[in-house]
Length: 152
Image (cartoon, rainbow, N blue to C red):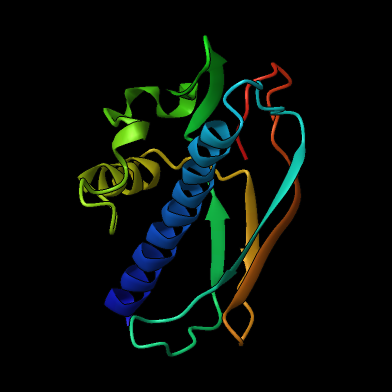
């Protein structure tokens, strides 16, 4: 029973990291589309997920938590991701979370998962996944620190 609980916690933590990764991936696409404009990091945003297995089976129940691992900073036409103080000693590189082939997560995501667990870092938002596998983070302000830097 205890092993099953640990596996469930690991899956939830990994899904949380994936959610954060999806948030980070969206930023460069926005920047490429509007290179002449600085992104407005103060806007509210939302993320909606339908959680399914690789075979398409709905996965319901549990919770998802978003962690603010990095701040987005616009510098000289580039969007940079700088680790927050909480994750500064994690040894991870935010721009290396996606695997080189772009089809999954790299070892950096696993490092973040372990670091988060070992250091008891609290997330910025948690939602319950419905029985239908649906989860939504809505109206979360991107400027949590009040310093003009972006993040969920």
